Image 1 (cartoon, rainbow over the protein chains, first blue to last red):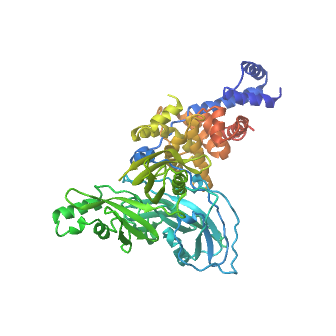
Image 2 (image 1 turned 90 degrees about the vertical axis):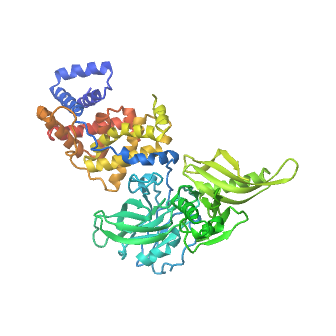
Length: 458
Length: 176
């Protein structure tokens, strides 16, 4: 054996990886070879030094900060983020970044000027981003048990030659045209057919565009959202600027106002800029003890005649549009059912279900959003396919509009009128609620679980 | 309890999940500290790793050891932070909290310890990872291979070279 072979044995000995025969061999060699004996001693002292290292402990545990979020974490399993295309674009003054979101998850864009003919636009790099890569910062535990603190997710990034005039901008996903007005950068949506994506990174949130900086933390306090933005290391002249597009999802919860003020601050707390956004409400049940519902009850009980509007479900919605999370300019209409009121805003249709209290006033108990056949996320598409399949198999004669009642990371609840022919041949029509489990396959596809819970409402 | 049972138990309630996270937090921090050498970075990585662990714990199906699975999360978080250049690896000289014998009784040991910290911090990342997993956490070749996504042979090679480098740094570079 050579010295090199013994060196290997000396090291493997530290790992307890030697056979009795090898140990014997090594002992015999080191008894006669001073170099190897010294080397063995050195390694042994080195290994022993590890055993004497002081314990290192965090000064304080992070777990108490996380505890308020744990019930929600147990309900929602985090899933991988989409594999987006990552275009890097160059150009002159106006540049285009393509936001690789589902086109169908984005309402029609505001018209915006197209990139000039002289301006080159090329895709330099296509690189999938994993969840690990897109996460900018671990979320900070929220004081609000119901609200998981949102975190910025990098959607796409690119380099521009000329530094845009604005460092950071926030818009809703249906106002991407505004980004060009504010930064000179055109952000477009692009349909990514081949990729199954969920959750959508701006769902119930905003699109944030940064220049040579990145959001490191997001704090939500009611309708005020603070985004801490850290500057990148200064780049040499002529290297251009890095423009990044982030989604910050989950800024609105069911029953929340959609009007948010986004304040960008630097790590020292200096305000960089602010933006106002008007987000659509999130489908979900409304707590009877919510501020809105308590106010309706209190007002009516205090003065039933003065607040007679509370005896009419339609009037309750009209009077409380903002409290329900809609814009005051949303359109309200009565439906065929007394306890359901329809609201439309920004191309989306909602149904508000209300319930009458014993005293006679009505309170909203559920916000549901119409699932549009061509504008839905992967799980919603699967739900549509499920109903189409039941109809194709003859298990249903027909089904009506599908309304999304609630969506978590691992479940989706939908209400629909279904038409079924019974054994006597007569047609039964019922409103039913279908609850599906969402399963993410290993390749990131979304599937619905086999177990479907069906509840007949009427 | 088997690893899978530990996970099932941890996911049974928020309290159980909290207990589980408190149990794993010290060794997550320890790995993060030795990898980064800096208290603030170690805290960032610990916090982020804890979130990742608690959110994806349901995906652990008993494949490989739970300890290895958690360390993979920590190492990946460290690498990701390095890529983003958020982590500046510095000398391991701050944030130590010794719960052991008073320092004055162990001056020589402390000096050895300091030298070892500095030697670990001076290692290239790929060597530092295997050295920390092997000598701080006493993981087997197989566990290290699982954590780092390497073959056992690759782990042995990397350990061999890493330890050679560490020895040279530890003894002042006159041993090579």
